[in-house]
Picture (tube, rainbow, N blue to C red):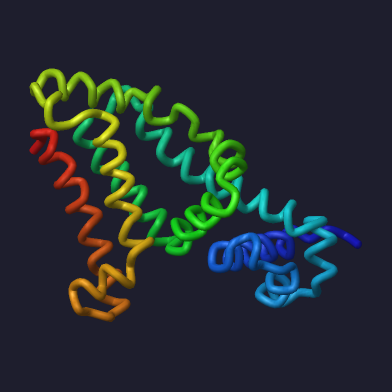
Length: 207
């Protein structure tokens, strides 16, 4: 059988969709095949097994996120204020385009923490803590005498948390404001691309 790149990519897109929604354990090859509109044997032909396909999807997802962020945080020419804007915007846009991704990762960490964190997330190892951005944060915090109220570690945790939480807790979030409106949720996410960066910069005495 001759390999077809379009078919291969179609199966990968289907697998990403199903794995994101159901997780590894609950997903069957037949689910991926049906979602892709192809025969189950074709999925096995291109990717050998569910495990092999899952590893490709996981690695590609993490690599895409890692590359996007590392480019920003290791840029020597961009100041800390603009980096915060760029990190928040890129995180939010990525998650908005992959809404199931946070739940998918959390589910896999809970199911298989050692492999998920140790194997798949190896590309993020030392990412923030060894970056130009981290050094800039430390220098700014020291210069502004903010050491008693904030640290570079907490700034990074806060950036990631406020970007990710709405996608993990979307139903609870909308319940808290007594609304159930997909368009409103999308609008709130768009607004938060600016607001999240604004709040982080305020904690650092940045304009």
